[in-house]
Length: 479
Length: 136
Image (cartoon, rainbow over all chains, first blue to last red):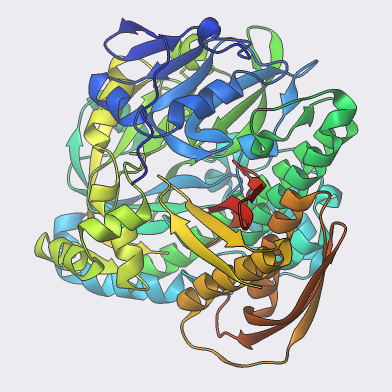
């Protein structure tokens, strides 16, 4: 792994928070704050996480401070785990600040059965899920769309799938933003992006995307768990995917466009991948409309995968259980939100929204506890359910981490342990794995990621979200 | 014309370093390197007709990125993976190429895009050096 030790002036403000002052680099407009204990901080300074965060602090209209979550690591443009807010009036929007997998996100399905009662059916369940949910390289999806249908998905997200019988009103209510961003503009999505997306609705994709069969291992907050319908020993399913080739192409199109027009707005950047335009400009508005459309595609994609998972679960578990959607959260988005009376464009790149009980966008069913926050671990380690806090609004624009965060490159992970060993290790622990190949398994192995328990503990102690439940894997289908 | 490439470590993505004695050689190497990655992911392949490419950037660096993104787009949509180049020429910021390739049964999707992050194309003793980060 490339090791680039970064040293910037900084002050530790507490056990979980470090501040890099705006004076640390001459071009910074605002300070940077990093949620990390000492161990996680030392991991971050090994690669370029901090220099990328500081680059974000130079963008026009950025508000004080920019933030890194405890799972943050080097990415491109923004660091993964980066959060930054911009004035909607005179700030920018950056496609590179959202990333290529627009609205990559996670949703949790809760069954009504104990995992122990399914012990002899976990392997057939995982096997059937791997057959019914198209995963891996570019496999076509189970929901055929013509041009008009795709435009409906782009405009209406999960609401269109309710019409198609692939979603329920309850599903829509349990999805961030109701599974539809009203600012979506299908007309701002290029023909190329639509061509890539049309065959992909209901597909998992590659990389770190997965469907995981889990058991609720520990409850930390009884009242919150009851409100979320979670109980010890319960079988759950976690789904992680995004907007597929459609989102990749939207980002590619608009990074390219904004790279060209920045001189017109007098914008100079330390990294071209941060290409941006004023939010209020024609280019900014067009990207926002296209990004929201791609986000709606991603909401619908996770819903279509959910439909396939439900049918498979029903078949294997002999109709004994429904799979209720607990919540669906997004990771890579720029959202127009009101914070303290001001309209802000909040970029979360590899970060999760975590609104508290009193926020109007927290679904009514969760007003007593806060918005559910879903933190997947690495394959083979625990995942967490947390609840958003009102305090997070002032500390992190209502944001928290989105996962464990990579700790090493894919090449380093493969060098450390080959895929067949990872497969055997997971099997020895009773975890059923379906993965296209050993290479993908080695790249996404648990040792390639940070300690999710530690990451979640920082979020909990920092008050960004509070722990509700821990889930451990029984079976994994990797994309 | 000669060129080489190597993949460098990056915490979450893939970094491609390219060297060529000319910019055209470097672009050709970039195409073959990416095609190799895509073919490794797709596994099986069968012969397919050659195809023409025409890509326009607005400077050398964006031409490199746009070229790579064009190869990704064709691989995903047409399941056609570049394996070699018969000709490649650059005029200003326009690339024209005749490429040979193979048809693959599934669209490679592991590489999402070539990015502008840390994008660097510069003259070095003996030729041109470039680094580009691929989003994985």
